Length: 538
Image (cartoon, rainbow, N blue to C red):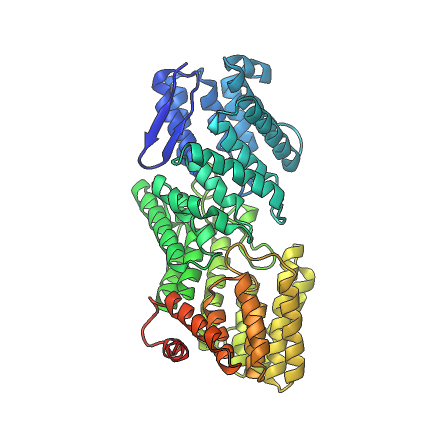
């Protein structure tokens, strides 16, 4: 048995002893390192190199098969994975015979369960159970522990949160990090485990080390923002996503790939982070990257065949959007997903900047984010007919979109827009009732794990309405509640400073104004909010 303890300046450092030929160990370990950072195509390449060197190396086939499952992106290619296993040997028993140790037999058995009979949910549970057994049998094996932690996270349905399972996985990952502070899987899975809206602070250590130990991975550069964004650490989040997007562009250009391979997920988060920093020009630049990818003749145009690339009903792109474009495992972006993301980016820019004229006369929309922004802009521009039409569309969406969570978000947005319409026609009491209902509905939902939905937080909107109506104390309470859900959001901080000043709560006003100015220290010059905040901070 050869011991592989292979450091990599680009991907991290693991120890993974196996029985393969010594010459096959470096590409095998590099494949595992790529797996830990969800760089599946690169992992497949490395495992195939190991197989070429040692055709009977069972764990090299295990690794390639595992690369055809993207557990947290709900994307898998089980037929391809089964074909890989069949290349090792034609039957499960024959494949077991190829693994010379009990430990390696356990790894093979686990992946056999992942790609066995039954629906995905049952297969994922069976895989997690087997990885748990392997971890118990070999407690010193960091790789068994790491893949068990990831398997646990994969058992949580995409529309649900399970803190007990998430924390179990996170604690396993943190224990690995104590043993090996350069383990990319441990850092990565800890970030996903604590990415639940409630425990982000527990992932701060992992966030600060992951991109440093695995800079070759665009995804590794992005993942720290899963902690930084929900904590309102805008500078750190923006730096992570700037780096992630730049790395993906560089990789695609070096490999001669199209813009479909750029990391537009990181770019969409970056645009929101720019907005919270008051960098509206940079936010528009981010949108232009998507527009260029969608331009006629672009290789992303009309090439998506992955149903997950379609809008999920609410118009919110689901998770890490991937359409089958150019990639071995399908990590790429199609036209439908990009159009939806561009619509959301435009909507957020309009709502956060207050530049309502961007939507003047617009008659179409690609998702409900854009529909809400169109309705809100129409109210601000006194385009009553268009505002009412948008409200009707939102109301219909809240009853008809297939996903229950998406319907709930659409319903809150419809109530928000109803309040704006009512206020515009002079029904202040009716407007406040609507805003209160929207805030109550939002309050029943879990805290956001990333960019907030609805795109205009309902508590923030209610606080603005209360302040306008003369209830400064009530507005303070709403802004504080909004900031508890979405820390350091710029509009909530400035709203709190305004309301607290009018409510006679000087200390609260000064702190909120200073926090706003700190968040906006890179903001576009000449924004009136800066002068206002400086006055409130005195």
